[in-house]
Structures are given as structure tokens and as C-alpha cells.
Length: 450
Image 1 (tube, rainbow, N blue to C red):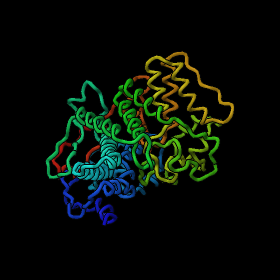
Image 2 (image 1 turned 90 degrees about the horizontal axis):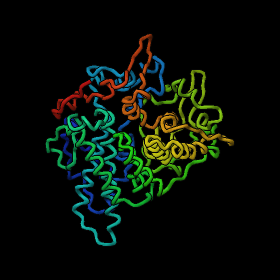
Image 3 (image 1 turned 90 degrees about the vertical axis):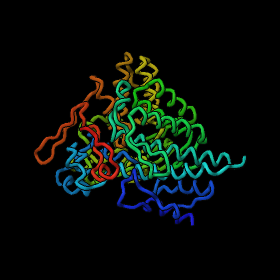
Image 4 (image 1 turned 135 degrees about the vertical axis):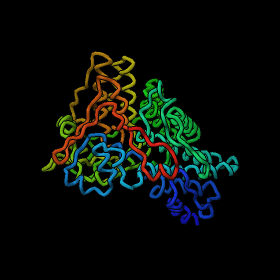
């Protein structure tokens, strides 16, 4: 019975309704025990951990290009439009937004768990298991809200967050409740509150890396606060996560000739999930030449992350261990968050110590540590290495949104297709994706201004 329940959940909602108004048939969803709810959370191939909401941002982030013939052959119109930062009216062409729809599917599933687990009163022998289930559901919901906020909301700026539109915060299992868009401030307040509560409930380390842990929750909070440009809090949570475990892979121990050099669930992975679109197929994707050229021959990431071919370089270095892209949380990201926050405090020497502790594991023997004269110089070095280390993880889009507010680091993205040039200037309104027409019609929420 449980297996059927887990399998049916993603598809039990009427296709005639939007994801903010969909009502599951509760007769088909019958978990009764803490173990049932944990099994629902563990159904990674159908609900959680799989194809998280950050694909459109990675398509648009400018770290790769495709040939015109490959672009034309893409199955989804939203992939083509994300690649050229397309106009709202042309973006979906009758399609549902995949990132929005899949994100709210998982939010709905998390709310089912949160609704049900509160009705179970655990005895003392069950308390830890109960805490794990509730903490996991909160973590999954906050992870998805955060991921969707990076695509469908403006970048967080404290001075304007209270007046900018955020997400519809679906917090109840009863999806018949009408939910409009919150403010951006309310969206981030909810994300932080859920993640902090999850950290209090979860165990220090996960039994399985598809399950969240206290360390993963700390890592997510570090990522959230970095995006909010609250560098003090970002540093605090990065440090908290690294105090639990800070081990790094030695890239010299990996086989560059392997099709997928990085083991799934490797020691750096705190929380595993993936994302994918057809455009990320290695036969289509060609790494942006200047990015590829930034890796020196002594940098082991060059051969572990990429394959050279007649057209350029393709990507193979996903921590997922296969063709899907890794969209989870890992130790190396925490090193880079910590180094950036130190540099921003003016602690250039300490920032470089943290950065070099990471890079020595990425280079061939004889690595010469990087040096910086001051915090500003250290910051530039950290951000350059951040892009190179975390490439194709669904992070670059968020980085562009915050860094484009700083004249030192802003960039203009350009792409060419069939003789036509497409440009995305810093701070452009197209750094927010549109909501699809189907959702707008069914839910009555407002379209993004872009």
C-alpha cells in the first residue's frame, strides 16, 4: 500500500488546475506512521531530490553556449527563451513553467508530510525519528522556496524587499485556500524560519545523502544569507557547518579519463539533488571559451570538469556522478562562502588561507598559494575561484544577481545565434523569469514585471 501511495502522489492532481489551486484526492494518500512519512520523503525518484528548481537560471547564466542547430532542436520553448533571455509574451508558448510546477509539486508533498506528522504523538523512543521527518519536510520546502525565489523574484535588497513581490507561500495542505503573492521580505522570512527550525530538528549528519541533516541546513542558511548579502550571518552558518565536517576530496586521487570522475555521494556532498534540461546534454553544451581558458594546466579541475572536443569543451564534472547536474550542497561551497565573508570584512590574509586550503586539493603537486595585499584583492580572487569551482551547479545565476549590484564585479552577458546578438545588461529586469500563462489564469496572481 505504501509503495502505491508514494508512486501516485505526484500525479494525483487534476491537470485542469494550477499548482496553487490543486487538490489531491486524500483517499489515495494514506500514510499512517512516522515510517510511512519517512518513506514518502525518501521517494527521491518521484518527488524530492530530483530535478530541483534551478534549471532555467543555469541556462541563462552565460557559462556555456550552444550552436544554432542545437538551440533549434531543443524540446521546450522555455529552454530556448531562457537561453536568449526572451520576452515574456514569447517565453512559454503555452507550456507550463517546469521549474515553477515541479517546485510547487514538492512544496505540496512537503505540506502533506507536515500536516500528517503533526497528528502523530511520538513516544520517547520515536521522538528522534519524528523530528527527522518534520525537519526534513521543512528543509525540502524551504529549499524549493529559495530556489524558486532565485528565478521568479527580484534579487533581495533590504531597502526594497518589503515592497517587492515574492512567492505565493503555500504553507497548508488544504490547497483550496486562496494564496496570493507574498512580499519578497515575507518570502525570505519564511525560508529562513523553516530552515532554522529544520536545523533544530535534524540529526547532525544524514544516514543517506538524499536526506537533509543539521549540517545541510546550516549550509543552506549560509547560501541564503549570502544571497541576501548578510555576510555576517552567512559566515556564521558556514562556520557552523564546517565545524561538523570539513573534509575535501583530493582531486589528484580521481581519474580524469573517466566519463564521470566524481563519485555520487562523495565525501564533500552534504545534501544530494540534481537538475536537468535537454540543453545540458554534453553533445550540445559548449563551455564559454574564456571560462575554460581561466583554468591553468596545473589545475586538475580542467581535466576533471571538462572534455575537450573539436568544437570546444563540454562539461562532465557533476557531483551527481552521472549526466544530470548537481544542484545540492557541498563542502567546497562552504569554504568559498567563508573565504568571501572574511574578505568582505577586510581579513584578506585569513580569507586567502581558507581559499588556499580548498585550492591545494584541486591542483597538481607543488601548488603555490595565492596571495592578496588586502581584503579587496582577496575578494576578487575568491569570486574568480567561486565561479570556477561551482560551475554548472545552479549557483551562478544567483551570484550574477547580487554581484551585478557592485561596479567592481558587474558583467554584461552576450550570446549569438544565427547572426543575431542577444544582450543581458547588469540589473536588467530579465534577471527575473516570467510566470507561465496557465498559472496566471488559474491562480489569478500577478505577472512579473520584466
